[in-house]
Length: 389
Image 1 (spheres, rainbow, N blue to C red):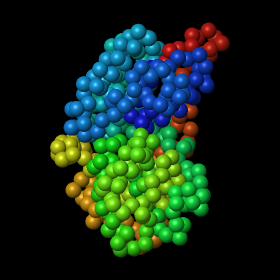
Image 2: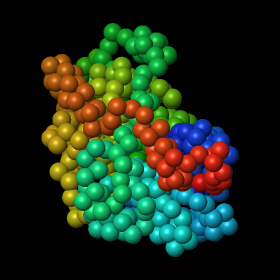
Image 3: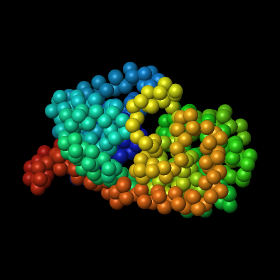
Image 4: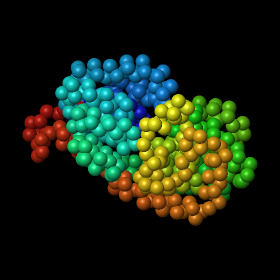
């Protein structure tokens, strides 16, 4: 059984399912995921979209849908009785799934650790009771779980193997309709509609400020989870003159690799930008009520994974009240005007790669899963039944 409750987990799940089928060709995999996992041969009885929610208001409105999907998933687990479950990220969903699976006697592996070091550290006790092994993707997470007595293996970050540009700068600018002689600023407002709705308007206001002051062009990278048509309508509504903004789909890594600066919504995209060495300003905004609760629950010195990994403020963070169009425009302008600062930031970002592993995270995760399924030294030819995962 494999459970991914959001887009990034769906992508990791698809790669992991492929690696598992290479090792266990007859394995049957079912669970919760999206298009990527379905294309990888996973029978998804529940769609990851049913659980993809951000912020308190969205969670409240989406609870009935998520509850129905949760029970469909568990009903299928009771029917299939899998030998092992791989739960991927999405702690609000998967820690609950883990509890129910342990009650059913299912071995549980958790891939992509919940951010217990940021908030809800008490979940360590829940994880100790509900999972059989944690596969973490950041090096500093390993000792946290070892101290808590939770079996753990650091496998590295899956993005290390996939984040790379596919086009040269000349090819990218031609494809995106950009002028290769002008500075390029990438805009990454998020991978969910609610994130885009909160983040994009202020980004576009910053675009207006910057284009009035200097020759610069912007590339808006459309996440695969966002409908480009919807984004285009939002863009036109909020930004009448869009001549300086170019939308691209499926070219996010190229946009980050070939932009001079990026404005990135806090999340996985900041790690992707770091791996591509793109100087950035990190932004994020949520509903006021969500921000109020987060103020008391989140216990970290920084919001972006870049700064958390570095242990210092490598990139500027404009979160909630600090996220204004004026602040964004000022920070972007400063980076464009100070190439030495950008170069220093690139060197800091390059140093962060050591915290993400050397590649092969999915392969190591697949090996760990197989090891949980079969005794050391055993093989399929020795008579072990091919499992339902």
